Image (cartoon, rainbow, N blue to C red; front, side, top):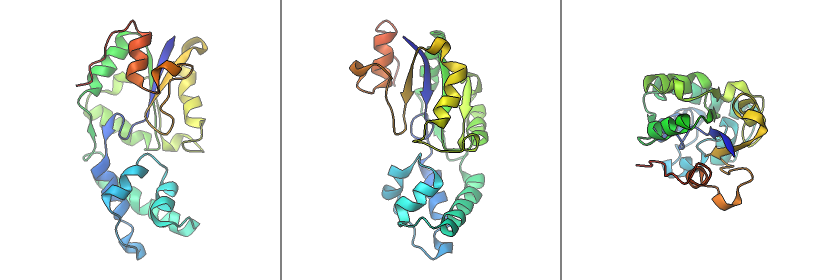
Length: 197
């Protein structure tokens, strides 16, 4: 039985694409590198900054990673929150999850303080029991450290949980769900459909 739902943030709960594209391309020209096409940036959304830099440039040298990360964060402080939009169906889904008494958490590489600010702006702070951001872990996804930290408060009695979004969007122990959060919840919560639109 599902007891908790753990969400990724970017492209699961919210569209942060414009801000991420701007933040990725902010430091690159200063580093003597050309800007990257938004279509190439999109598949890297949700990765850690070192992995984004390595994927897009083929470089992983510590100095380059540090300079790219500093520039990304500098620009993110200016534009990220305002350019991030919660998907319109998310408040209804969160309300339904809470009505079933399910625990809810976010595990993301995005800074927790930035997530909290976006949620507060959209009056969704009370929709989540736990938020684990990039500054809360030593190892980012796909390492499970953030997931372990999130589940201890929200997964009651060691029962099942759903992962929604990110590189491992799967419902544990539920192969019939084919990795779909919505199909999982419909099956395990009495077949009631969740409002997706």
